[in-house]
Image (tube, rainbow, N blue to C red; front, top):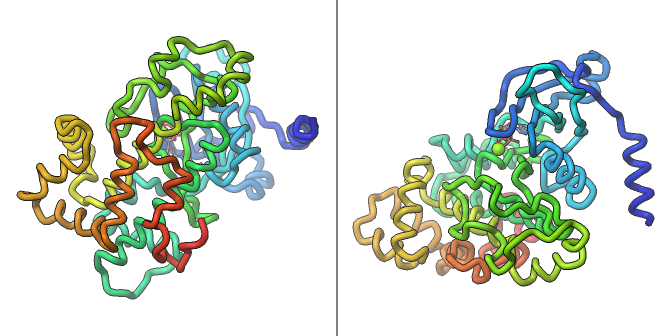
Length: 355
Ligand code: ADP
Ligand code: MG
């Protein structure tokens, strides 16, 4: 009851906006279900107060994305980009116009995808997180500490979502933004997310997966759960279904592939990741088999990745193989991964005991 009153009061006092209140800036992205722009408030005083914003015009999945963002803001705000407001656009005449508008704070220019593509990765990330260039010799151990810090931040954000009952389903470097305000990575784009505890957007055959990062299972619920229960039934049943099916492990596979791309310079391009996926499939999705097949004639870039993951008795490799596994129930959870020995060693700023 208290939560209900709080939610009501919060909603009542939060500013409300409509489309004409915003001036659109440059286009940041365009997907199948919406267009994203940098934006600001048209009123100069209000704009100065609010700062830069991001506006997404979304079509059919906009309502779900608003719902997910509202829920994240209340339950695990630090996991995702700061959500400001979401609303349904007043009916526009032209067809194909976005039906929903979503507004976030502009977190910064850099996605993990952009940062990973740079020749300077992972040192560019170190500079962002620490706020200054470190004058230290470059080398595997330093790179490992940077990658470890990114992984910790990603798993922390994912654990927040999963503990709330949300599975993202589209975890990839393009959907990870560096927040200049908090100097941490946050997750964005809840357009494909599902909340299994409440049964929102549980449409297993409808969603579109990104084949580059998605786990081998086609649907995140097992085929023994043939159709979506109606929302009220799902509310009662879904904690059990969650336990049975471990849908959060879908995201764990994707975050494992991000770890892989950070460790192996030669797997950072789309085409090399696609080729890796093909190889892994041929190896029965067994990373150890894949390693045996490629390591003997591995070019230096690939060998360097193995070397990094082999540091400290191979705990990095151990963590990677606990995430990238064929069977969902054999994959580690975000919470368990955070307790993995890989994170016991010191990260950047000696943050090993913090998020
Ligand atoms: P989609 O993938 O559906 O086009 P996203 O929500 O992933 O939409 O946003 C597209 C791009 O816009 C992102 O890859 C990122 O570059 C940028 N972006 C999205 N949200 C933010 C934000 N809060 N702050 C800064 N940039 C953002
Ligand atoms: Mg996206």
